[in-house]
Length: 185
Length: 185
Image (cartoon, rainbow over all chains, first blue to last red; front, side, top):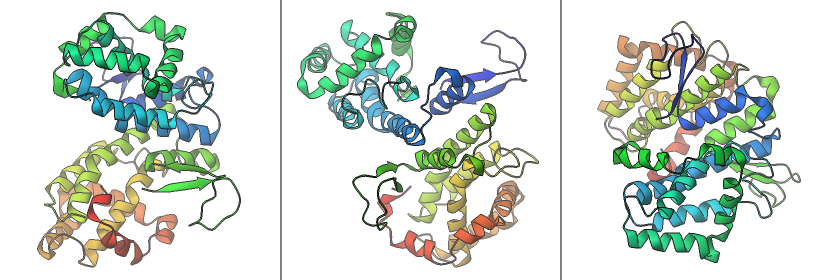
């Protein structure tokens, strides 16, 4: 479970102070970062677009992540993953660069690391799935017209400087592999 | 699933226009209402308090509602309901009137109708649970020191004018009874 210790004295990251405020839960943290740094424009100003961003995050958490975890972490069939990708495609607006328009928001941030890790696992032929399944999923994602909208969306995300700078080609996958299967997703 | 049709022409509520924006999911709607009416102060301005409000909503959804639905809707043992109430008590700040301070926020709104409906079911001896269980739960909630913090918190909520005006003593319970058990919670 990701968490942030906010405020209090300057201490090592692994020794949080009792004086700092502890904040947990991914969605809460995303909103917190957007609130702390309004100049980063991580949420649109328009109430309807803000609602669309939050709805997107809900679809990521409830429709995309279960299938992602099933395939990438627990080695289950990729069918549920593909269903989740279709759900994401259903709410991606035609012609828009990101989830709710031209602005990269917490909606996109909520799915970015999961697709990036999936791509790493597929590219390096690693993970809980079988090699044959990974090969098939890799081919389907990168070549099938059925998922082209999703893959093009991810292509725009992964070309962002902030994503390139924070996506380590090796360590995230190692972290995923060593985590007990029941702690995630 | 609650939903709002926002914008577009003036139409009857049961005939939403294709021109309006449809917004769904309870948490998304709460944030949407807070964004639409900033003057209502449904979220604090402070980023830490906003995070605490959102964390409270997460606990309501993931720790309180499953036990609530189990007992009130499906007639299961009240044990999980009481565990959820303990989780809520753990994050209620001593001395504060509401979830994150003296301000009634979307955090409180997220739990208000569920406690109000539970109280109605207990007061009128109705619901999926057995009469004996309801009597026991009613007595425990209203007299046990173990849950006094939670019940006092609800006491402050139900005395609010906005809650009194929107809590119908009869119709919400009828709506709950006639809903298929698998559509909620």
